[in-house]
Amino acid sequence: METPWRRRRGIGLSPLLSCALAQVETMSPAIALAFLPLVVTLLVRYRHYFRLLVRTVLLRSLRDCLSGLRIEERAFSYVLTHALPGDPSHILTTLDHWSSHCEYLSHMGPVKGQILMRLVEEKTPACVLELGTYCGYSTLLIARALPPGSRLLTVERDPRTAAVAEKIIRLAGFDEHTVELIVGSSEEVIPRLRTQHQLSRADLVLLAHRPRYYLRDLQLLEAHALLPAGATVLADHVLFPGAPRFLQYTKSCGRYRCRIHHTGLPDFPAIKDGIAQLTYAGPG
Image (tube, rainbow, N blue to C red; front, side):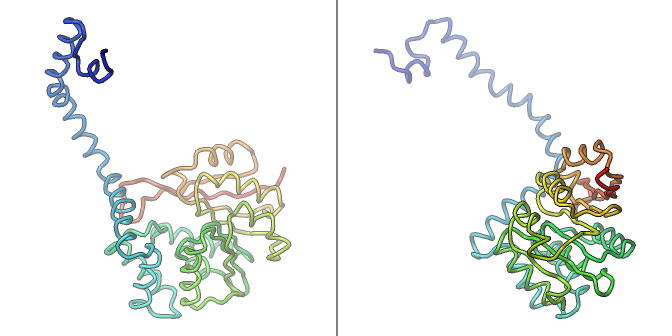
């Protein structure tokens, strides 16, 4: 009986098909050589993305396995030994140095950070809501720029990451009256903000978690009437990795004025990204 293995190897096949298979095997090196310029072109054109992939996935996974710690925990250990307690500016600079010279942290970075601080200072919000605390970098930027008596609520879904962020926030000198860290998914936390955290309105919102959740969470904020007319919504990473549905909604629904602040990724300026600045006109 003829087996599938024998058919795959060309044994027991017609002479014509066997000849065709032989020609394919003969042509394979030539085909591979023909594709070589295309592969080289892609590697050169997208070299920044390949470098980002290596630093954020391959090297990070290797170090996670070797150390038994996450990158945020390794960064906090570095901050403890190199930063000045009670000095948010020095802690931010230390995190930037760690990301540039040790391990890429995937944080907001100084260029976007300046945009964020300037907008907080201009808007002088009484209450700020941040979705996506991560290591606490953008949290410190906001807290530094808040006017006296203002309040920041920051939400992080991962308990282990939140534990690191809490330590960094308190190390910088901000107490729970100024910065309250809430552990939980934004989808679950937003409906409880009014009753459990006494947030009746958010004058400024920073979306810095996962771009695919931006639209869902913006609509949740609208549905629970947490955005007053004139509120500012900032959304990071709207161009890379991108939030096309979120941007399409905000531009087409008629309730927002939208502006994009174009930047690059920290340490990868050739990879274009941006922060969306939205001004809420009201429910309409």
